[in-house]
Amino acid sequence: MKDIFTGKLVRLSAFDPEEMSKALTRWNLNSEFQRLLNASPHRMQSTKSMLKLLEEEVGELSPMSYFFSIRTLAEDKLIGGLNLDVFNWSVRDAFVGLGIGETEYWSKGYGTDVMNILLRYAFTEINLHRVTLSVFEYNPGAIRSYEKAGFRHEGHLRKLLNREGHRWDEIHMGILREEWMGLDTWR
Amino acid sequence: MRDIFTGRLVRLSAIDPEEMSKAFARWNRDSEFTRLLNMSVTRLNSSKAIQKWLEKEVEEPSPTDFFFTIRSLDEDKLIGGLGLDGIDWAAREAFIGIFIGEREYWGKGCGTDAMRIILRYAFTELNVWRVSLGVFDYNPRAIRSYEKVGFRHEGRMRQYLNHEGKRWDILFMGIQRDEWLQL
Image 1: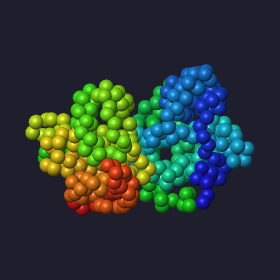
Image 2 (image 1 turned 135 degrees about the horizontal axis):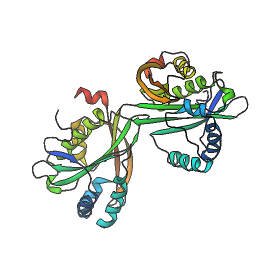
Image 3 (image 1 turned 90 degrees about the vertical axis):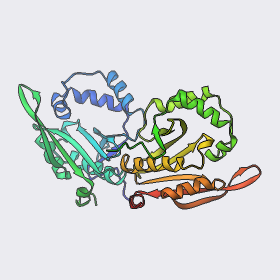
Image 4 (image 1 turned 180 degrees about the horizontal axis):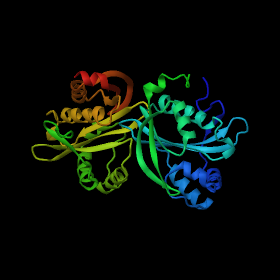
């Protein structure tokens, strides 16, 4: 049986709050990374406060959330992280958040590879029914990557974001188990 | 829409650790009750100790455990409890434990009624795939009740229990969503 956490370019590994807090603090210095990652106002955080936050988040093994770090297969280098939050098990939907912090690994298929691994985990390991994500209108690279992994556009929160004096849509995408089963990315 | 927690004889209500610990400490003095309830060595616990344990259990609602008390519809009297616990969400399997502590409500269909409510909750609210239970072979009344609500016999661990100098089997029963939908 092939390893379920290994893809073509990357593998998912355990989330080590100490290692991750150092990396995230560094990635966070890049405001473009933060712009692409989430909708909150950008703020700077010390490694210490980041560590505290991450330890609280991943401290308890819960069936509601799954954290991973992302490593390259070539150099075993930490390049990003992701989390899957099952907010309601009775409907079996989860929200996925994914960030590649190392900019030299952008636009090379790493994120798409991660998403393929993650969807396989979501649909065949924890047996979810759907996976949801949100992405920002000004991030066409990510949108294209999610489309490649099989996500479909489901709606826009129009002009939700206000950045650099512009309004931007937040786009919601989703993929259903039966749609994913029809893809050849996981076989 | 009808209330999902109400049956014909009983309703499910929230666990109040203070009320439940008092009732449970009283039921616990009845060793026949504890024999039917679980397979641990029967011991007596103070209501204080039980309350502490219950408070911890209900303090943080867990996505894998759902506990209720059982009240009679006629007098709104606390007569027992039940819970789905340790739900394996990847497999969507839940284990059910149920008890009627008030003896005068034994053998009157209250347990069966409560089980019907919790199965509806399990299959249409939590949307689990199957529900399992364990019962002892010296409890034919419970076995009959579980059969009535649709549980099937799935296996037994022979001579597992040792009570009053005798050996007894543990029976395993289960019901799947598609079976329940047929009822």
